[in-house]
Length: 342
Image 1 (cartoon, rainbow, N blue to C red):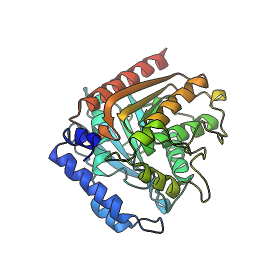
Image 2 (tube, rainbow, N blue to C red; image 1 turned 90 degrees about the vertical axis):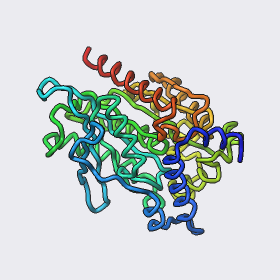
Image 3 (cartoon, one colour; image 1 turned 90 degrees about the horizontal axis):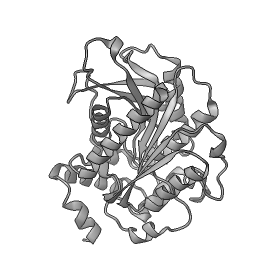
Image 4 (tube, helix red, strand yellow; image 1 turned 30 degrees about the horizontal axis):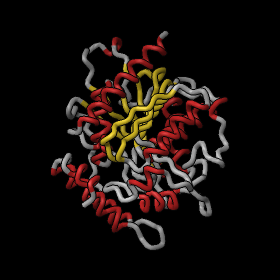
């Protein structure tokens, strides 16, 4: 076992080890030689959490279908209000995109459900967790289109059944982890270019260890090529499964500020962005470059780094870095929401 693997393992409870082992088994044995995925195996290993209309740990959830033909739906997480007077409650809204390399997981996966539940409770926000289509069955740009369509659906249907009236669509954030962080960026770009929302106002982007890449091998990719939860071989496979046939990793979807980039972020009214990175994440250098790219385009962006954090550390509630991340997100939301009032 490598030094990095030992460092990570000693911080995990038996529940986390079991769940990660199940997901790891599913990913390993569901990949076919023709670059497709055996969904039966993966679904067996990817344990799901049902919605809970009765509050569970202070959060109730429900699912809403947007388009059954592409299985596009979302799960809403609603914190229990501190007062019975709904007219006095004002909760920001987070549109959230789960991780999984564009190819795995769903909004109902136990890991994704638990993360959004904790985030909703910590930040006092209504979270809309999007269940988008997966690759390789559905390659780029379907995931981005699904995410953007959910924003438009909410914007055009503000009186949906069960959707809380105190959810403040004038204080909206887009967030995501890993591949979801990539989606968060690209959906934000689409939203900025669209600029026709009637009710939604984006005031922040939260990218948690976003999945970016390129043809170049960075120092962190070389140093952490065989890290326990994400390997270079694995990320190469995921890009190949997601990007259009014949594309390389310098495609604008993966290398946002790379040689093939086609979108000029500087001309957009791009929201303030917070980027979280981990010192033991092989994607570290690409995430830092993303932050630097936003700054070079004149955008307000903040980089939060945890030196001992591995990829997807935030899925382990007991880690001190997870508590720090949750608090940073809470502070960011409060700051941006207060500024939006001014």
